[in-house]
Image (tube, helix red, strand yellow):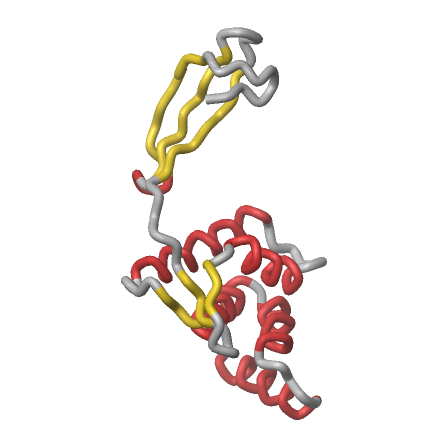
Length: 151
């Protein structure tokens, strides 16, 4: 493992422990050259999940793309970065447990909306307005009335 401080490739593992319910191994390492410590994570490499977009094209699932959409929806809201990461982990867990190698962008969008609705209603409405492409104020009001009815 290459040291992020001095680029030396000689290090020793100080501590190793499972994280994410055993799906990842976290290792604390110490560089043998500069003696600084850093953390690495080992994860099982999974087959890439392909996303089928509305136009029928396919692209690999991109966690950062989903994160950006969630960050836009939660902008200036009191939603922690940890909550967003937990949401992303949960979404990825549901996708990978679907046992499908291809999922639709609509499936991912619905998962995001479900998680946002439970986390922050304003962020949910923001995301829904873009995702469902509200055409006018009536569609927007319909979504708000559904939200209020469910409360």
